[in-house]
Every structure is written in C-alpha cells, then in structure tokens.
Image (cartoon, rainbow, N blue to C red; front, side):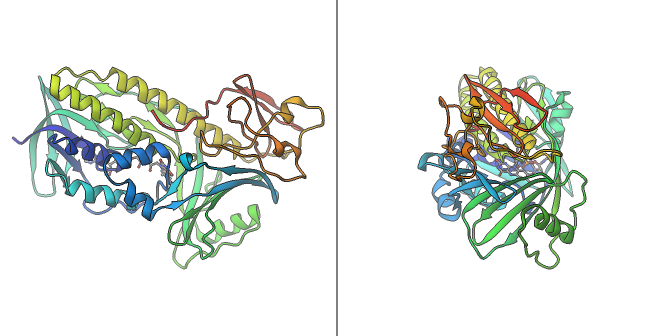
Amino acid sequence: MPHHDVAIVGAGPVGLLLACLLAQEGIDVVVYENRTGADDRSRAIGIHPPGLAALDAVNLGAQVREEALELEGGEVLCGGRTLASIAFSAKQRVLILPQRRTHALLVERIGQLPSATLCTGHEVRELRNEGDLLCLAVHTDSAHRADTASFVIAADGVRSGIRSQLGIGWRQQSGRGSYAMVDIPDAQNFPRAQLYCEPAGLVESFPLPLGGRRWVAADPERALGDAEAFARVIWERTGIRIDMPAGLQPTAFQARQHRAARTVGGRVVLLGDAAHETSPIGGQGMNLGWAAALHLAVVLEQSLRDDLPDFRAYERVTRRAAVRAQRRSSFYMAMGHPAEGFGLEPPQHGDQSARDSAASSAHGEHDHHAGRDPADTVLERRLIGGHHCALGRRAVYASVEGRRTISAPGSVRTRTLSVPMRSPSA
Ligand SMILES: Cc1cc2nc3c(=O)[nH]c(=O)nc-3n(C[C@H](O)[C@H](O)[C@H](O)COP(=O)(O)OP(=O)(O)OC[C@H]3O[C@@H](n4cnc5c(N)ncnc54)[C@H](O)[C@@H]3O)c2cc1C
C-alpha cells in the first residue's frame, strides 16, 4: 500500500500550487486528478498581487510576468459616459493570463520536483480514517487500489466529494446571477478593462494576452447562449459591435457563493473552491485559494515535523479572507444588476455624501483615481480616509467614517452597506 506524507485530491490550480510548495521542501506529496487531459475551460484570467506572490514562491512568477498582459487600469462606463477611471500603482498591478496557461506552468513545475507525483486519470472515491493514517480508495480506468497518507487535502473543487463524505455543510452566501462569456480575438490590444454598468445589465470587457478580449454579459434570462444573441446584446448595451468567430459559442455560467461550514476534519483539510465558492464577478477564487495554499503549506510542514497538527489559524484566516472576498463579489454583482426607472445621476449641489463620493473599485485595495469627466462632478472625488468607495450606475457609494453608505440620487432607495474592500490576501 503506497504511503505519502500528503495526498492532494484535485489538480486544479490550487491543489497544484500547494503540491509544488510542499515538494520544494522535500515533502513526499501525491496529487490525484480524475481528468486525463488538460482543463481547457475558460475560467480565471486575473492574477492579483497575492496570487503573484504565491507563483513567485514556486518559481513561476518570472515566467508569468513575461507571458501575462499587465492591466493598465480601466473605466466604469454608463450610457456613453465615463463614470470613473481605475489606475493601479506598480505594487497593485493585475496581470492577465488565462487559467489554462497558469495551470500548464504549474503542471510543468511539478514535473521538476522529485518528491511530487501527479497521477492523472486517478479518481479518489473514498476516504477512510485509520488512526494516524488516512486510507484513500483510488480508481483508474483499469484498476483500483488503496493508498495511505498522513494528511489529505481536498482541493477537489466546488462539488468536492471529500467535503460531502465528511458531512461538512455547504452554506449558500449572498450573491448569485447568470452570465455568459466569450474570449475572442481582438486586434486592438487595448490594455484596459471596461465595466459597462448599463440599465439593461452589466457588460465587462477585459484584454487578454496575445491580442484577445474577454466579454462577459449579465444574462438574467439565460438567453445569451448563442453567438448571435450575445453579440446583439453587447451592441444594444454598449454600442460596440464584436466579431464572433464562426463556430464560437458563448459559455454560460452561474455565479454562486458558498462556504464550507468548516474547513478541517481531523487530518483532512479543505482548500480552494472546495472550501469556498466565490463568484467569478470580481475574479478572486483562484487567488484566494493560492493565498490559502501558502498558509497551509507552512502548517503542514510544521505538523509533519512535530506531529502536532493544528489547523486552527489556517481555518480562521482563510474563512475571514473568503468572507471578505464574497462580500466584495456580491457588491460587484449588485452594482451590475439591471435596474428600471432610474440611472446614475450626478449628485445634487450641496449633497455632502455625494460630494464625498469616490471612484469605483473593481479589484479591491487598488489606488483608484477619480475620472475627470467635467460633466459629472462626482468624479472629481478621490478615496476618503483610506476607504474605497464606488460610483455605480444607479448609486453613489460614499464612505462615511468607515461605513459605506449607498445613496441613490434620483431613486427611491437609500441603504447602508458594510463592504470591506481589500485585496484577497489572507
Ligand atoms: C468564468 C470564470 C472566471 C473566473 N475568473 C477568475 C479570475 O479572474 N481570478 C480568479 O482568481 N478566479 C477566477 N475564477 C475562479 C477560479 O477558476 C477557481 O477559483 C479555481 O479554478 C479554483 O481552483 P481549485 O484548484 O480550487 O479547483 P478546480 O479548479 O475546480 O480543480 C478541482 C480539480 O479536482 C478534480 N477532482 C474533483 N474531484 C476529484 C476526485 N474525486 N478525484 C480526483 N480529482 C478530482 C477536478 O477534476 C478538478 O481538476 C473564475 C471562475 C470562472 C468559472
């Protein structure tokens, strides 16, 4: 019966990164992945500074910097007006590299580390606790066997089978929506993100490396699954005509948010999407998982050395980071919901909260400079007292003594939200 110090179930970006971190320290780690080929789904593209720090820790940072496109900033737009501009300082930059490429680099890296084994085409179907050992039932197309490990990390994604087996609850959090998305060639190479907060619904557009662009559109009616409907809606909402390559269909996805009721069960630890599902709107799930993997690697090393596993700090810190990230995503999704009856109005003269409003935050703790559209005085405002505020299509988001007050000039609603806007570092 083969034995390993650590067994990781799932070779997504998060499980692979943890495996590299452990193997670099000479720890014997095995990763089981039920897929046989590459995961070609269009998923994460944004790499935030904490994510880049994690890639640096496995010696991939330089390669990623070389291949990725650096996002220069972005705009929040509505009805043809620029509501806010977003700028990143050198320390806060966001890199864009498709997940399939980051994944390929991680697979390549793991192959260079002698104490790591990546077993593709291996599905873990069962986990049993046998005292100080965990026994895994591992199935391939042609055989099944039992392996043992001192610790098991469930990095098996949102539908984690290990989480279910442990009977750990999967609690829904606020923030859900339907979207459609497509990555298409784009000759312009415009290195900025554009967020269209339009009355008919959100449209996001991000540059991709090597001349491409990702378009994401809110799709509450789930009607944008075909290329023609998708292109038409982009045109109707933004006035931009996109060229859909023949045969390319948009990918529909449901944004949902969940958190595991707990992330540790004895010597089994949940990691990445298995522990928390974060809406892609806001682009944080992978970065959050990587930040958690950095923390978990240190705890595992100590636990193996001293044989005194203590995952309490890991559990506390990752939960807190997930709560923050999910609140941010929920906020971004709310900003992009279709609305009837009112649009964003410039603030009334003499309206203190509106005058104190600031530019939009699209990626947490970045330095957001106000736009300079003279037609809209609110855009002259900057961050207040270190708090990040947002200007939305239908609301002015103002920071008042640490609270975020959302006031919607011209609308019937005014409400208060507490939205900590930080980067997804643990
Ligand atoms: C449209 C979209 C856009 C996104 N954009 C961003 C972004 O810009 N930035 C960002 O940070 N995040 C983004 N995300 C989120 C990001 O893709 C996920 O957070 C990330 O993939 C999670 O990685 P993971 O390794 O935890 O899980 P996964 O990537 O889901 O990997 C889990 C792996 O486990 C394997 N597995 C499952 N069960 C078993 C089993 N029993 N045995 C063996 N193997 C098993 C699966 O085959 C899979 O390969 C986006 C997501 C989507 C859908």
